[in-house]
Amino acid sequence: MHISRTEATFCSPIVESRRWTEGVTFPPSRPLINVSQAAPADPPPTGLRQAIADAALNETDAHLYGAVLGRSELRAALAAQISEHYDGTVGAAQVGITSGCNQAFAAAIAALCGEGDEVIIPVPWYFNHKMCLDMAGVTAVPLPVGADMMPDPQAAAQLITPKTRAITLVTPNNPTGAEYPSGLVQAFFDLARKHGLALILDETYRDFDSREGAPHDLFQTPNWDETLIHLYSFSKAYRLTGHRVGAIASSEEKLFEMEKFLDTITICPAQLGQIGAHWGLENLQSWLAGERLEILDRKAAIEEEFPRLAEKGWKLLGCGAYFAYVEHPFEEASSELAKKLVQDASILMLPGTMFMPEGDPAGSKQFRIAFANVDRAGIVSLFDRLCAFHP
Image 1 (cartoon, rainbow, N blue to C red):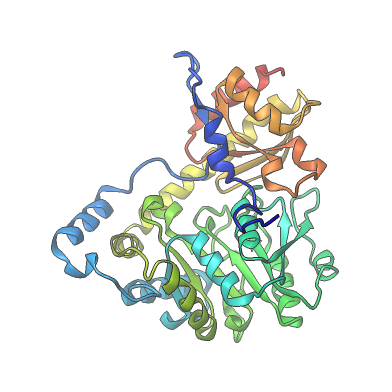
Image 2: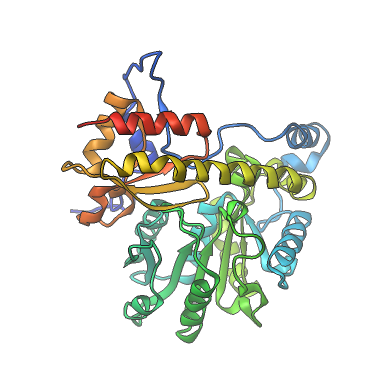
């Protein structure tokens, strides 16, 4: 029987989990706590919204097709920001703007891979990466992480075959929250370079890393762009999720190939979103620093509250950026418990089965908590409900 590429992959976990709340009435005393999605719910700051509004009213080119790889001023501004943040050298021609970071990953895969090629990705994985590989006809080769949620370069080396084209890392990690040490990222870069592979490094959440300064030195490496494909998102930093603005930093040669894909899919990134992202880069760094401190405070709240759950057998496996990754103590699988949590505790969070290969037993014991939209008081309420939950 013929199976299409979309049929070959699973339903988006975000879409599926939203269905669990349909028809459910949440008591006024127990409103829904939604920790399922890692996206800011508030709109951008007023100044950024005003910049978009002004452009919509006054700039003709804000409504027209633009360059496939993005507006030149935004590419130059991001290149300068990356160079400063990582103390490296990145030129505007090495940066491309995409319609969100998911599209940046898809463009990288389209430029790197052919039918039946392989990409190594640590598990738990970011589910949209797996879905993209499925729909591209590329095999996702799972690399299980250790108890500390860190992938092992030596284990990755054993997975490399003649069909391997890339290794993908996400740091701070989605879904575990783990922040990969500089030495670990460097080891994966060295492994990829040794075997002529690309290292796709997704740093969507880099603005919320708990470490000060650059999290790695890859941009200081001579000819970094021969190996590294760096992905970034403006969505989380500047609350631009609905505008879909992401970015790639790589070699001009690879961007040339990605440009073919992007021209076919979207022609160009949305102009108003790019204008907003550029304004944010130029004007919101102090504001963003405050946002980072707020997220780090919520991370601290998770760690402070967790001993209450630990007493009941839960384990905190990882915590950082927007995420906590936990292990539950119950006999039932997390995929079933997640639905019961909606009904019985008014909590919507994603089970570990959505971040694991099908049949992997670890996923049935795990959950991801996305706490970007839950303040300290909300985190206390979340833990109150989890402590009282008995399936």
